[in-house]
Image (cartoon, rainbow over all chains, first blue to last red; front, side, top):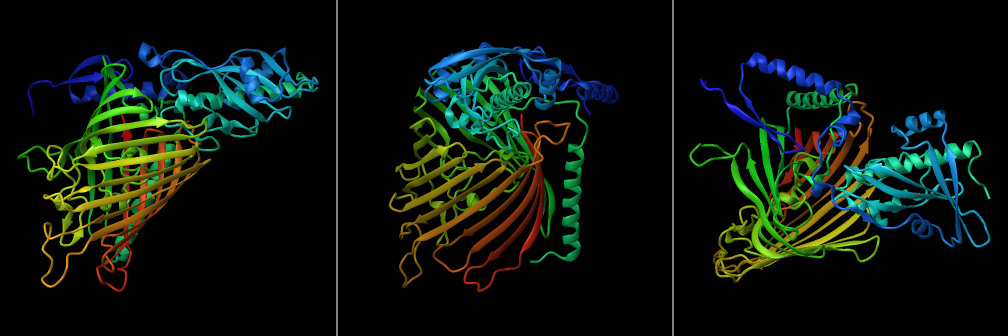
Length: 230
Length: 391
């Protein structure tokens, strides 16, 4: 056994910063291991998964540039055929409804006020509903619009703004058309009813969560008669 | 040879205990989660323009007469974005513990790939270096953490000798003919296979992998793959490798491969088939007196079904999933002769706490049929436990 303590270099996975650790007697290593294990055991999963909150700042290259693909109005006209006008209905969510959204999606709603967009055709007939929502992918929010039929099944999903350097494949209809006809009763999860895109897993998960949240929200609003029906 | 009943019992017992351990670990309560990263967004460590990552696997292999641990692969990746248009990528593979000259080890260290790319557009990239030959899909997508069974398919060892890396130059790109479809291509000129690909009138594809530093016949081979995805979840590919392999450059080796993958919800079906044919003239092997030289060939396929279950059901690992896998392998090692067949059925159940890490349990039922043999040998049963992760 060497008389000299060995040096090891440990690198942070996110920042790449190096820390030199000097070898120390085995019992102390064991204590350190137990302490670290204890910290990991008690870590908040949400915080651990979020590099912004855990203090590991992404580089500019990792974040990338924002790509604006369409406006809400353009997205609605892409999803629904024959849109002549779009009306807006602002509706508040109650604390019970916010709790229900949390329970059914596993995440908090970002706001307690929703702007429900209602596209209508030239005769004034209601075509469905649409909501704009945001959910964080890896570092930054993805802004998207979910359009549903009057029966609250998804008619289409469009990504409005994508702000990260990788994973942008989720904005293609090749991926987004999977959400068509989904309802709040569907799992909307990878390995269940949504196919993943290699290299874009976090963006796929973000959209899954966002679409599920929109569907649950609309269902709650419909339940208390807050959605226009004609 | 058939496993004795005691050994069979031990194999099943080890398999059962291992599955139990995996399930037990997975059932721990939730309170710590690490973020999961997608396969193509490795590696994690970044310094300047360079990034470092890789993968590791470890196997416990039980066969009828042997059982052993095998630290099979440790593969660091180094990637660098030299500029917006120039990228360098590499994998250095340490197999079976690696080997340094003179240490008596039985492993190896090799440059699995090392490429410099010039990106002109997403649809047109120029690449040079040691290239992962696009011959079938698995040769390129072969990382242990991506695969759901421990052993690679037999066809990807006997017919497409994975991992096949060749020194060369060429182009690759991805095109989007419509909003729903994707077309990708790779085509390279490479040094190609060597004369060692023919031995005793039969093909030995692994032995014939060519040199990264010299072309034995000054005739380049061409290798390429065309992939088409008509929709998300359906991928089809055809690939080929054609060129002279003997020292005189007179004899030709042709390999053609087809691959496909279908995913629907939690179900996946994938497979690959490949055929290799070589002309054999007197420059390669002298025929038996009184007979003419014959061609040599080998062919095979695999089909694999996967079903993902209990997705997110383990509260400690919200991104976890179990996958049940079944695969059928069939290879004809000498298409010019009767027999020389290998078949294998593999049943597996693996657990991924996150997408990047996997613990695999496989039961392997294999049998062979000798040249000119009338009957198949009995099935042999093996067991594999392995673990693999990206880092």
